[in-house]
Image 1 (cartoon, rainbow, N blue to C red):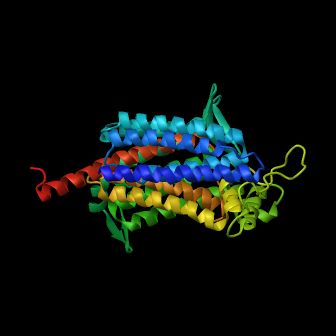
Image 2 (cartoon, rainbow, N blue to C red):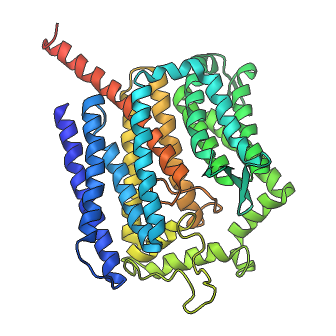
Image 3 (spheres, rainbow, N blue to C red):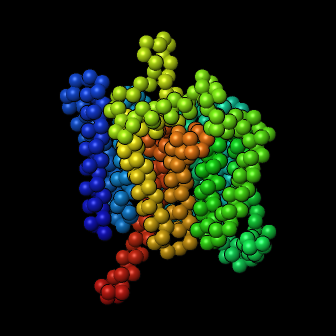
Length: 444
């Protein structure tokens, strides 16, 4: 597997070159003196990534060689876009990138035998639920744009939902590994639809209820959709019964319809999605401006630094594209690099999803398969939720675009997610290599 690690190292070089080229383009567009600053930034980024690569070469020599370079490519692209918005944001994000790599290393060191997580699944589930409810606690909870997303404890602020997604995936992977046979064997067909046994239907109702609770109590439509979709993906992989997924989708749609018509803030979010032109200077402003920005980009974009973020000459500055560093960063990307550039960004997410699902396919035990599936699904669905919201496929939510949007909680949590994926990948690929060597007679 030495060649796999060599491919990983080689793949990091063009990532650093793209970062350098991106900063160079921003400096040129902003009229800054070019100098060697972009080369310096590219060198720093490459050195940090190579250090992480050397650690992987020692600890996880058989892990997937493409996941880390693809994640690094997303982070590099995000740094360039954030620097174009605000230099301070980019510097903060770079610091958080390093912090994420530190937790990435710690996760691998502490969880080399990641199956130990199965023993503490209920404790991990309790921690995940506590993290989801933390923003509603008085004194520490923070409300952002009508949703309870953040927690502030002294100088530390973070979004607990980013870490809760990992906790819930671990719990669901462990629970479904143990109970999937019961769900299949005890299922009954009623009117052509396969239904799980009633006593084991509880987990589906519990996760459904938790998703509805997030809609009402936390007001976080994006996280609610992300968690529930990841659960349905795990349920399908565990049982192979598509009817279970259909039932789950029906439950979610019924609950969403009910709360849309009874809970004002949920109904307002849906109304803005369906009819943004009714309030162009109010609730619909952000959605409309993101649509206009994408239309302005065309196929090839305006170029880095060419998109207008504020109304020229306005005092105080009036944002033309609100929350460009978080919620609507994809609209800014389309405006500046065009549809082709945005499609390339989406392709990176698809490649990460493909490598993650391949890891799930080659994993030998049930928990590893479901863990890799859940982690990959929640990552891919998070990207879909924010891109779909900006393009009006679904209502716009406050979910971050993984590794690209500004946010410390997101980038740190996703590095932990990446570490778990690589742990599963390393074991699965090592077992495959060992089996091939035994069959070929290279080992006794």
